[in-house]
Image (cartoon, rainbow, N blue to C red):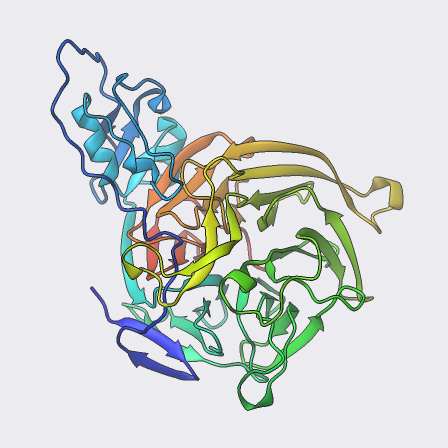
Length: 444
């Protein structure tokens, strides 16, 4: 295990802090009793070893569609996919310890390539880590640390070193709690959810959209209100071919105690035009809009709905005091944990005012709730599972191809490297590197 990095007050120190959250702490696989029930036969094992030997890879038989009837799984959303109990098929035990689980053998092994690898590179504080952004000119990965309260320092990983090295950094002026990010034209764009008018040294900030120059650390604010209402907490963002920024607005900042005021407006998805300052609501039906990304051709917008998570209840650090400080997040297994696709329609306005049509649900998460979302160069969707330890890889229609299994919760992801075939997983307690053949989108 590597040292735990705790960022607070502009200093990077080593140790364990007093902060904590119940997002993925519950998701340890249940122990498996391999005792077989009498008179039970199951001709084909549900899982088998497959693929290269550089990682532990398991292929599922027919997507795991047929399990011995004695199987069970706790409805608690904190119980992960590998927490299902399948006593009458010993092969199931291999799923829990796999690095990669393949559902579509041909496409899954193709994207893994000939030598896939996964390695946890850093232990970090048990708070949410988000907004990973790769800056190719610097060969650096910027990562936001969401908490504890008052924290104004984020992380930067220098990928020119092997192994990579990590340090803390602060912007000028200081930025409170970025949560989503992307790279465009030499700048890092952030969805910033921190909402506080009384931060250290007199700093005042409302949630919104900001742009950071990675060479200087200088931040320019672009948006911080909707006609006088402050946003609940912009969660993630992306940019269309016209330069408009599309972003989701959720209330996690309030539940994580990173906002001094309760939300003023509905949770929704917006389109912001930096050239004019206009901001327009484009979607208001999702319970908890979260990750957001366009298809490679820009004709489809994908949004994740982490609706099984809600803000409220008694403040807790979660099971085993997992999170580093008490938070107010509830989980309800019967609520939405879906990814939605929308058509982007702009023909009627000559491309000036794009809007969304043809909403359809394309995927329900195997565990946790879909969080950060990216689209690969070939159009595959790659979705972090938030309070869970997995990353799901889907085709454009939502058919699951494979999943990556980390040793910590994964809130968001980012590609790096000259060929963009290195994927970074960031989340509570860890930052992990995956090397495989699925390339990320070109950086502009």
